[in-house]
Length: 391
Ligand code: ADP
Ligand code: MG
Image (cartoon, rainbow, N blue to C red; front, side, top):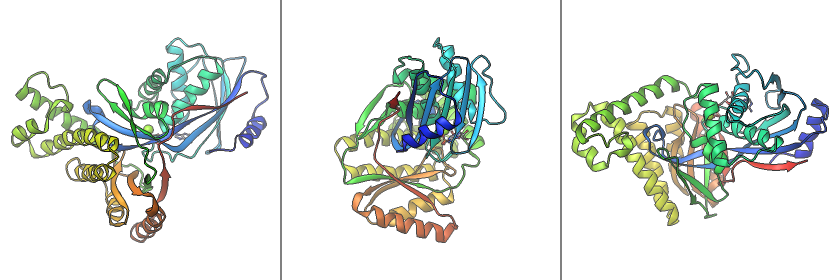
C-alpha cells in the first residue's frame, strides 16, 4: 500500500490545483492459478487479483488536456482528449489514451485531467501490469467525471482499449480480474460466455507464492500465433469428425480426444491434449478449492506445468528450474509456470509455515544455477479496482 499523503505532496509539486474534483484510485495485477492457453480456445481460466497494484491520483481540469506523470519511470506526457491517436514513442501512454478513447466512444463525456501514478507490478512479467494500468485509468476518469460504470462494463472497455488502441489481441481475463477480484476469492471465468464466478480461497494455512524468473518473455508473439494456428487446425479436424457443434477445443471431451487423436499429426495432437486436459484441470481445481482440498489443487498445478512443458511447449529452462526447485521444498503442494510462457513467473501453493524457508532456498539455488536473483511475492487474493480517497 502506498503512502497517499506523500503522493499528494508529489501531485501538488507537479500541478497547480484546478479546484475541481480529485481522488486516489488503485487497480491490482493478477496471477493465473490454473487454465493456461485456454482463453483463446473458448475455455476456462482461474486467476486471482494480487497484492501488487497501480495507484493513480487525479484531478479534473476545465479543458480537454490530459497530463500524466509516471512516478516509476519519471516520464511525463500530455495529450488532448480531442486527438487520441496511438503513439510510436512513449507507448505506455497508449494504455491510458486507449481507455479514454473507448470511454468516449461508449458515449461517456470526459473532461481533461492531471494524473500521476505509481506501480509495484513488474512490467511484462505476466502479472498483468497492462490491465492494471487500463483499469486504474478507467476508474480514475469515471470517478473524476462523476460517471457510474459497472465493473463488468469497465473490464470490457479496458479490453477494447488493449485490443484496438494498443494492438494486443488479449482476452478478457486480465481486465475482469483486475475489476472483479475479491478478497479471499479466485475468479473462475468462462471465456466463451464471459460468465464468471467467485471461488473461495480462504484457508489461511496455504498461500500463493509467485516467483519471478526475471527472464523477459522472448519468442512470445511468433510462438503464440503458431499455437493459435495449431489449435485451429485441431478444431477443424474434430469438427470434421464430430460435426459443427465443435467450434473450439473447449467442445471436445477427453474421451473424444482419445478416440481420434491417433489420426492427428503428432504435434497437433499434443497441442490439443494440453488445451482439452487443462480445461478439465480448471474444473477439477474449482471443485478442489470448494472442498478445501488444497493438495488436490496443488497436484493439478503440477500436472498443468507438465502439460505446458511437454505438450504445449511454452515453458523455458528457467521456469522449469523454478518449478523443479519448488517441488523439492517442504510444504509445497503445487508449482507451475503462469502466463503465456517463455519467461515471466511461476505460481506456487505453499503451506504457510514453510514460506520463509522456501524463499531462502529458491533464491540461493536459482541464483547458483542461473546467476539471477529471482523476485518472490507472497500474496492472498485481494479485491479489484477501488477508490482509495475522494477529495
Ligand atoms: P504484463 O501485462 O504481463 O505486465 P504487457 O506486455 O501486457 O505485460 O504490458 C506491459 C506494458 O504495460 C509495458 O510495456 C508498459 O507499456 C505498460 N506499463 C505497465 N506498467 C507501467 C508503468 N508503471 N509505467 C508505464 N507503463 C507501464
Ligand atoms: Mg498484459
